[in-house]
Length: 372
Image (tube, rainbow, N blue to C red; front, side, top):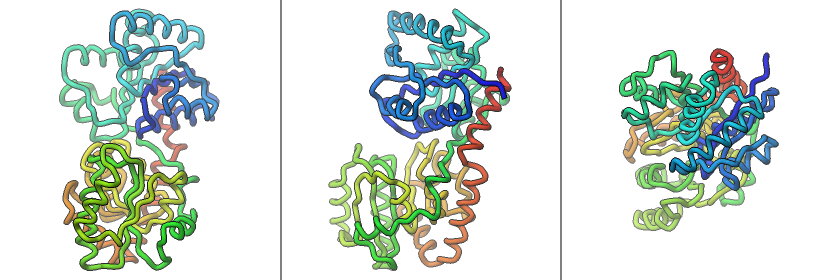
């Protein structure tokens, strides 16, 4: 198929799921022979990741400034870059790139394709300038169908202008054959211990508080179950969780692993994966990673989760901020190992068929070619 030249705006200051979506797409397009350039802020994790992957980067723009002076300067630099590299498509994963793309399209070249890819829950507001901005947008790609409602209901975006392409998971890296025995041994987990784990940054939106409360209910019935909390400290500190656990008198049942360099091996060490999030999760990587590794999953009904994890078929979905429901879901998995294993195997098959990286890039290519 014809080679495409595309500029991906991934000017995220940290490596979150939104950045992962853009970098994974850029990598797979580049591997298929397309001309791909990553535009971001020099020194930030997404740009460094792009460099490590051998992707060409463009870091001359200020991006996070909205003053007329910087906008004008950035627009001029963008114009020169697009003409030099013969860019056909601008795919903006952030609002700053979206604005610059729309301005370029208005003042320099109305034929260039502008796509806005949205992978976060901060949905567009319904005001005049935003509606005008989307008039210059050829396509909107969302990472979850739930995000489409705002565009339909508030911005009156026609259905044919918006599509959903789900975030993928690397099914080679995350696979059921990965061994977790080494990590279990390091953490002091016996072979016959049931390990229930939550993996992700420590933030209120991730629902660690409810995970701990759910554990206290489970331990009354199943005192031998172990619980793992893994991830980087953020707005919540490990000491905060340790204080909560101590107040419940369940310190001996909890393990804290911090940040593990090999997430696949960490997940391999877990028997039941929990996603206790209270909101967000339009790109829930960890749910797909649990599923890809054929782990039993109990997750909350937020964001994209109900779209990828079929309730009572691939896992169990419970309401957010409900420790009782969370504990009941986990206990159901513990008490019914055969059913739990069947769900886990169906999860792996579902990921292989619907959320692999090959399908992800093919679906995006179809959008690109249809617009060109």
